[in-house]
Image 1 (cartoon, helix red, strand yellow):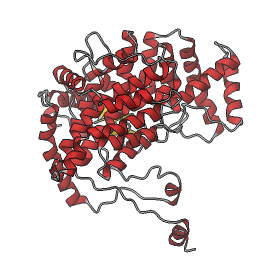
Image 2 (cartoon, one colour):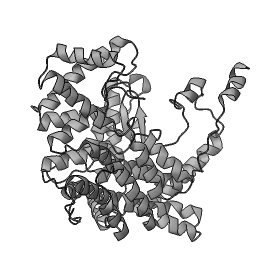
Image 3 (spheres, rainbow, N blue to C red):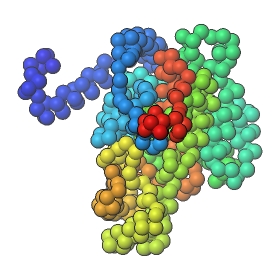
Image 4 (cartoon, rainbow, N blue to C red):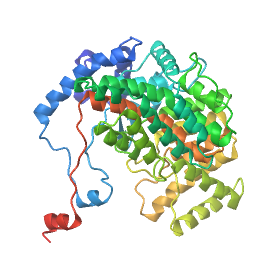
Length: 468
């Protein structure tokens, strides 16, 4: 701060904003310019290992929170018990990827030629290194993923033999599990690799997995919803999202831009959500990245996690069917009250941590305002956005009445022709691979042990707390 001759007492809100913006720019400028991601990471790992080693030595006994009985029965909500390097969820600001907000990521991360949305490759580079990449680094990553994308024949055979009535997420999980035949970590572990090298082979698996999941996901889409038509070859000149949309069978540049945004903002949401925690937990047993990610997919498939955007869309379509394409505010409000009084929830509103509108909702809304402002379903989403929060607050039972990411994504996908709602969670899973794989590499680099919290029975807990 002395460089700018600004004392603490004189720092105004305006100064703080300027300094914050300057800090973001300086961090971006100071990043390693090498296009070899593993080489960049190899420089960072030893320094981070030493930093955390010193921190644990000096502050290992320090307390960071408390655990209440309600937390134990309430899904461990609010317990500070995990370390997640890749992102942090702030109740007021929303998700920050390595300290950067979504608007900052949209501004700083490289984009495709002529595009306006960040490339997921850039977000992965940021998540795993903490540095904002340059265009050359992102292009190198796109090419590397394209070169790693081929599937083993037994996985292709498995995918092509699944019955079409098997849920896409079940197909996804099975195929990822079967991909563990390719695990370099599993082979290295069996060969006796030193634990200091774990992160290097986990990195290789992570890169392979991220490269392959769009091919798996596109094959599932084509087999389930497009009569098994081939996905075609991965093009090494295209970015990760463009290859994915091409394999899905979509040629709209706008849809590809939407996928770039979607795959970026759904990638990570700190470490405590079900899919991220499941990957971390299973990985802590030294299960390879494929088995760990399959566990995360199985958690993501649940209606309280990744399935939520499908439920939102069904709710909106049910409202349209009942009230017409352009209902009045009064009719929408009445429909909302009837839903609540019947004991149901309004899907897409509220969040376990956030206490404001989800920034992931906001950036999708901005995309819709730019590309589909007159779409009837989008207009209904906006109408619900105005009406639902005051109604929820009026009930006196809701801490966060604001919309989350799931309130919007299904509407955008419907507009561009992806009407198969059972597939939406697969898209989420493709995106989530970025965050959880970056996290898993750091789990092994930092030598995190197997996760094993202590549990108590209700009788023992009562005796300990109430003396009964």
